[in-house]
Structures are given as C-alpha cells and as structure tokens.
Image (tube, rainbow over all chains, first blue to last red; front, side, top):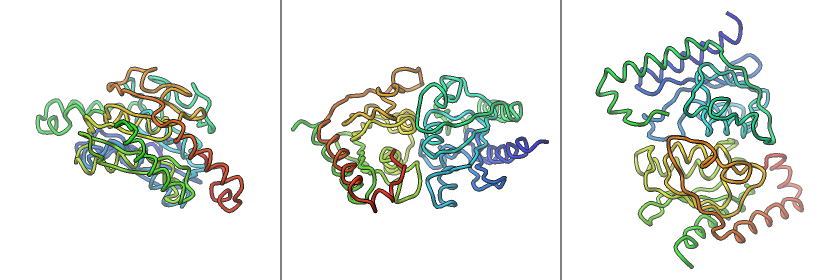
Length: 163
Length: 163
C-alpha cells in the first residue's frame, strides 16, 4: 500500500465506526506532516444535528489541536465526496488538499453535482485527488444501505435522513 | 416595523455582539412558529475554528433545542449572505426559508458568487428573501472594517481572516 492508501484506510476505519452506530458510514481524517491530527465519523443521527458530518467534526478537532482556524498544510482523507457544506468548510479552513474515496452523485460538491473547488473563484484553492481506495469506500456504503433495507428498525431510525 | 424587520433586528443584535468581540459582525437567529429558538454570532476568531460562523452555531443550537437535525418549518434571519458552508448547512438541516440582510460579493453563495439554493437540484428547496434591513446590516460591516483599519491591534488579531 502507498501512503495515500494507508491514510484512506484510517478514514475507512472511521466510516466503520459510523456503520456500527447505524450512521451513514462516512469517515474522515486530517493529516499534517504525515501525522494524523484528527479522526472523525458521521454522527448526524446520534447527535441529532445535520452539521455533524465527518468532515466538519474532523475540522473542528484539528482546529482545536492546532489552536488555529487555519489548517495550513493539512490534508483531509474522506471516504465519500464532501457535500457543499463540507466542501465550503474545507475552503474556509484553508485545507491544502483533499483525497476522496467514493463519489456522491446526489450531493457531492467536489466534482459530481458541481465542483466548489474549481467552478468558482474563492480566496483559497483546494487540491483534490479522487478514487483513493474507491472500491472499498463504495462497498461500505453499498453494504450499509443493503443492511438498512433489510433491517426495519435501522430503517426507521434513518428515515429519510440519507445525507 | 414589520415582523421580518423585528426579527432581523434581533439578528443584528447578535452581529453587534460579534463586533464587540472583534469578530466579523455577522448574526443569525432561527425562528419557529414566530418564536426565536436559536441566536448566534460569528465566533471564528475567538473559538479558533473556521466552522464557527453564526449560521452553523445557530443551526446547532436549534437542533439541540428541537432534539432533531430536521429544522422543519424553521426560518433563519442572517445579517450577511451565507457562504457555501453555511448555505450547505441550511440545505442539510432542511430550513424552510432564509431572510438575508447584506449581500457578500466575495463568498456569498445564495445569489452573489452563485446560488446554492437555485443553481443546483438538491433534495431540499430553500426559499430566500433578500434585503431585509439591508442598509443597517451593511453599515455594521462597514463600520467594523473602518474600525479595524484604524485599530492595529484588532487588525493583527484578524490578520487575513476575513470570512
């Protein structure tokens, strides 16, 4: 495995934590100087808060760790393409580069529905690399929704809340 | 004053709190059934966290109050046009309508740089009304940046952090 894959596996570990808590399995980590400074998974259902996507929680943790809102020279590995809220937060926090696993055709804002990092001129440019451990990142989502369809209790919990 | 103006004044009160703490003065409130359920102001500098925009904090407070991530039938009053992060959070949390004071030509994502609520098809439609107490909302921002230019200490604190 190359370095990118090693880090994405750590993000996948986070996605698995979400899976086990019946949250849509998305995980994110933030790396600086080849060290992981923040780990997070989607907690929207458990925290009853739509802002609790993995990326937002990871940014908040990294900011706390660095004691700065500027996450300069930081890279994020995320198992699913960020939505507009999360892509916006990545720009706001000046993250340098984002590595994405699976794409999200419905709400993905880094190339699918649109590309917030490229289509518009903001005051910070974010580099992106796609398809890092893509198959594995897709599989965990497919497995999750398959399980949800079979499991009525889990389905009721999630209701129409798919991110 | 009509109802919209009364509520926007409450958001302006929040923006003034930010001003007094040397934060870019943006305030937001969330209203449900004509009652304010959340009040917030920009705390990006103080909290050292780029996600701490007024809108995000207001959404988090309202979610906690309602014990739900779905802010159905809720309306937000915000003194400055939301950025892409905040516009995305408004969609994610299913807020029904947003009333905007001043526009933000640089990062505004509800009509200025682009319109996240209209340009793309997401699974939730957000209504928008512009120019509510626009002059007053603009004035507080103008005053703030004028004060910042004069005040070196405040300028150093803010550095290049303008939202």
